[in-house]
Length: 62
Image (cartoon, rainbow, N blue to C red; front, side, top):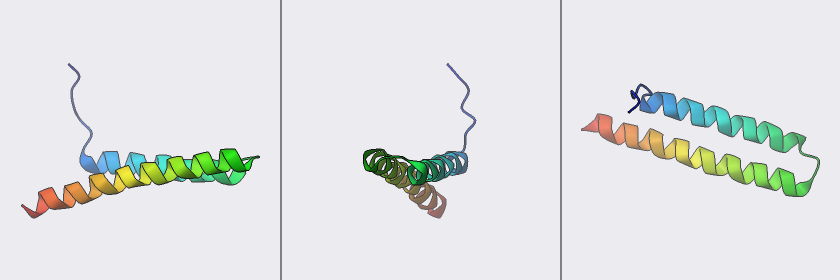
């Protein structure tokens, strides 16, 4: 079993970096299909990041 050492903030930061990278790749895509796929992936990853962030806020309020 591996040791857990990523905080929710770490997870949030990693996910937002991945989303930003996907958006950068989308802007450089040579096709509309590739651009759309990368933008959709970025939106999905941003949604995950926001869920982690909101969950962290809810936990800190208790």
